[in-house]
Image (cartoon, rainbow, N blue to C red; front, side, top):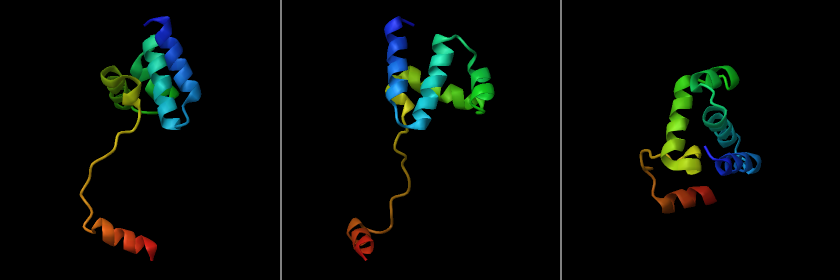
Length: 91
């Protein structure tokens, strides 16, 4: 990994406000830059499962820094229309 990438990870870590994303950035740095084992870092340092680490490393590999943010989740569409929801909210 080139020095520019290390600097980008460090700078992004310092400016990131979301705690979850900061944790994921630190994981990526510890594994890719410091050459630590993903499972050991996840379990010993973050008290997370190794699968958690593999998931975020894969997302970083596929999408870069953008992959470390939470993505919108799909779900069942609401049964109430938007107009009705706005009306309920006003009440």
